[in-house]
Amino acid sequence: MKMTGETKSAILKSVPFLQSQGEKLTARMYEILFEENPELKGMFESDNSKKLAGALLAYAQNLERLEILEPALNNMALAHVKAGVKPEHYQKVWKALYKAMKEMNIPEDIIKGWEEAYWFLAQVLVNKEKRLYECLTVKI
Image (cartoon, rainbow, N blue to C red; front, side, top):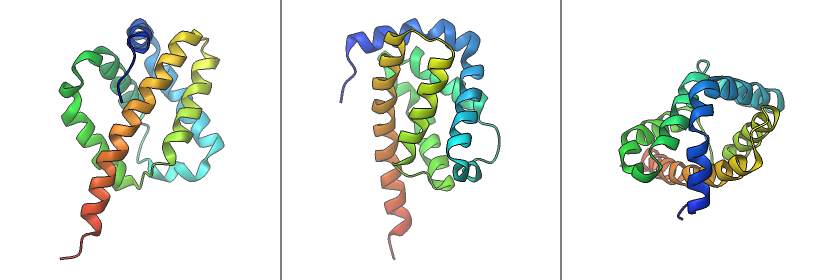
């Protein structure tokens, strides 16, 4: 899967917003996520708003060099497996992020770009997490 030039352009346009309002966006996203899915709250040890805001910004700033993010993505996948994240959780997170973006009046082209970029990254993480889960279930 490859992101379109249109998507990359929309994501790059969101960088100034993420720099100034990223934490506010992710804090609101987590509020929505837990309001709609209270059972997920136990998967989080602490407030991850700052971490997620930083991850979104790093992703946006390195779209053309995603290999730079490989160590961070490996750590994220490992943290997800430790927390019990499953592929179906990504839909719930996207729904909450989408609602938070709409509330913050982010332009539709940027939301559309982030939707494609989100699912691109989600697939990368799901694949990494799948391999980790398989390692955990291997019997010696």
